[in-house]
Image 1: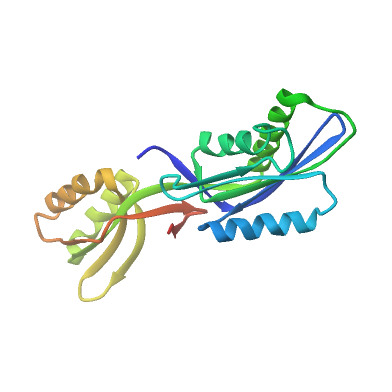
Image 2 (image 1 turned 135 degrees about the vertical axis):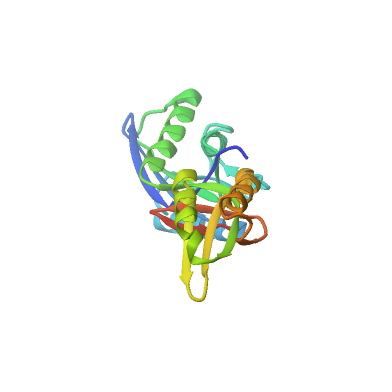
Length: 216
């Protein structure tokens, strides 16, 4: 799975080009209606601006992509903004760039550079989260094997979701999809087959600030 990202936290950034202000707002979204609501919100806030251009990408495989030049020359705003998002592998995001005209025409090339730069500036102030594909792995074993499991978790840099201590030990790990079979095999070997393993269905998730975040 190629590296893909979603916004864990949105943000904004601003650049000035020949006295024109370009203010970028980025928001995480999960569906098109939500993106349109964010666009309307910014347009209402900046009703006095010359342009409020936007772009959004929604879906695990970019199923929905839209952009608008909002009165700028065709292809100079929305499409370049969209290309910044897709070029960075960012999904489930909407960006609106508000332009306050400074009195000097920038030309088509200048507009493309300015709108692209505004999006990049906004991204600097966002928190991005890498999308990963994997499985929750439930492990039941006795107390004699807990040290081996803890070593295995550290050695493989796995994310430990939870560990419960009762009559036996239940550990829940988050294992990347491409490593699940190898990890299951290693656990079975290290515990001489004593560990009982249960693999959940594949899911898409991220890790942000050391916390597991399911991604719809």
